[in-house]
Image 1 (spheres, rainbow, N blue to C red):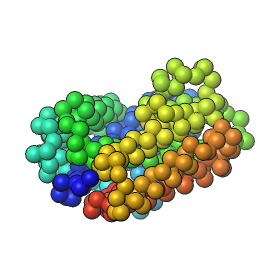
Image 2: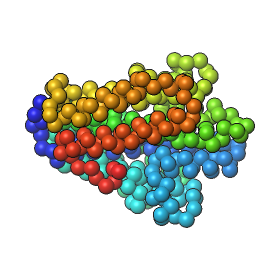
Image 3: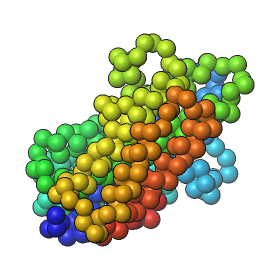
Image 4: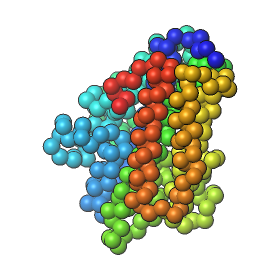
Length: 324
């Protein structure tokens, strides 16, 4: 299928979607962490958890290039409204709005209204005192804006090429974030394997980060075994934040872009997608130890970066600096 759409338009739709999804995912992680911090009996352990949050939501290297130490309040600001963090919630939502603005003639008018309303409100949020409740309200508003945006897209857009580019961005971003959260959780579990602690908390937290606790507990008995949680979040075909579900939908969307045919320019992209699917389905998650799981997740994250590059090259999109 010949894509009858300018590459700059496709590029804007794809990155609008990725940035909305990125903002929601990071807002969920921060919201859960703030709640855990209030509930924690061991404040020192709760503070250590922020090191994992940096790795999930941003780059520890970039953070330490700006700051000498891990200060909780500084970090919260860095991850939410800092102009110096390209993946801050503020920047991600600004990128999404700018991409939507340049494609307003293609998108539902309600989507622009939702994103623009958040943008206008966000200016006021930055002037308010930096309290814990203010931060939680801001995180809730990011999540609500993302979910409302997705609702508008699903209920209002024709299932044509623009819609499909949006879907690829969403599912690819979500798959990569799930892998990153699980990788950080596995690393923490491996480091503290010999420490007498309740590792139930780690897997509960991973499920909460990915908005998957309710779905998981309805399918499994109330035992939080790592192998069951990992298998659910990696291979469950019906859970919309599992790696397999996301990658199935990326392949489905690319297949739709190509009209069910493989062209010479998309052959490498299809081969990579099929290879990733094979690696996911053929891997026995429940028989792997933590080192093997971390290796698998590292490998998958590398695959996601390669796939993003290949998708951009295939459809002449631009890989912006802030997305890398």
